[in-house]
Amino acid sequence: MENIENQIFSSYQRNPDLYDEIHDKKGKVKEVYQKLFNLYGEHSIKDYVTLNNKAKSSFFNQGITFQVYGENNVQEKIFPFDLFPRIIDPVDWDIIERGSIQRSKALNLFLWDIYHDKKILKDKVVPIELITSSANYLDQMNGVNPPGGIYNHISGTDVIKHKDGKYYVLEDNIRCPSGVSYVICNRTALKKALFGVFNHYQTHTVTNYAENLLELLESVKPKGVDIPNVVVITPGMYNSAFYEHSYLAKTMGVELVEGRDLFVENDFVYMKTIKGPEKVDVIYRRIDDQFIDPLEFNPDSVLGVPGLFAAYKKGNVTLANAPGTGVADDKAVYTYMPEIIKYYLDEEPILNNVHTYHCSRPDELKYVLEHIHELVIKPVDEAGGYGISIGNKLSKEEIEKVKAEVKASPRKYVAQPIMSLSVHPTYIDDTESFEQRHVDLRTFTVLGKDKEFVLKGGLTRVALKRGNLIVNSSQGGGSKDTWVLKNKKSIC
Image (cartoon, rainbow, N blue to C red):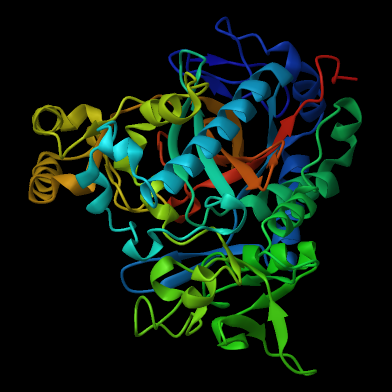
């Protein structure tokens, strides 16, 4: 470990075995960060604590919170935000953006295929039993043509930078990827706390997400509709991402509704208003498949709208994302992404997968069971970092427990090598100092009819616990503002 000299970074220790995003191998601050490093270094720790508390107050006053579901209770917390931003130069961003679009397009073609001709299954590129055994595969979607031909209107791609300096995709999220509201709020909070730093860098805006999302949602309107009426449907205020649902509805200028606010008549969807029923054409849904329509899926659901799926099948309303998309972000399907990209696009992946073992394959199961201590074990259908086991953090008893769970349900688990996520200087409240913390990046790609958009920034998530590799907010993680520079001369 070596110390870096600078006022607020004076106690920062750099571990040369980790890929530090702001320092080169010799410990020198990289050119792209030098100006920022100096600007922040002009502050004392006391100043920084004041600024940090100001940012927390901003988040609290705006209601920027999330909920953590424990075994016995539900806790609402302010979303942890670190004031020291992450910078991505134009060259790196070009790779990330093109790779995110490529994956989103390939996944959309894959979804169309498995719910129609099933060519990729017939050609045995992807095993048919992998699809039919997925909890997120919906037989009801077979033969359904979503308006505009789009399934995954909104995709979240989780990208890491490994110690080799290259970017890898950890997983694809196309059911209800969350976190984009925090990207925008992070930028707002940083501007309020340290506006001056933006005078020295030319960064892409992140506040144009809502207008692009609305435009793309309108592009997949049902046939025969001129000016579509768009709404966001939420499970309600007790959902962990309710802040985001309300934020997106507000910034798009559309109504935020719950299932009880909608009804179906003659296979068309209507919203109850004080002026009478109002037809709804596009629904950005933040409700899971099984709860969207009690007549078609879970009969006990009080969150959805009876008859909604029938209206959808007839093409009278657009659902974004489409039902059944979850089969494509199954972590077992992820193992086939290079083949899926090649099959549909005839291209090599721009962003590589992390090598992944699927436990339903006997040889790979054997390897996983013998090497759990050096692997990350993930359930294929969980989100939010739940259910993940990191082998080198487990006791002997815990390893045996994980082995038993994997052997009992091998289809449910994948395993990956323990990747060394890049680290970034992060302010830690407990020590009142900057320390190295692991980070990843969630990009947000939006597909419409002949339209595509990637938010130039994305959500940099930070594992706030020392040595932790799980960055999800539900597991104690936080986030940073992410600056994508406009060009190589973006430093003023």
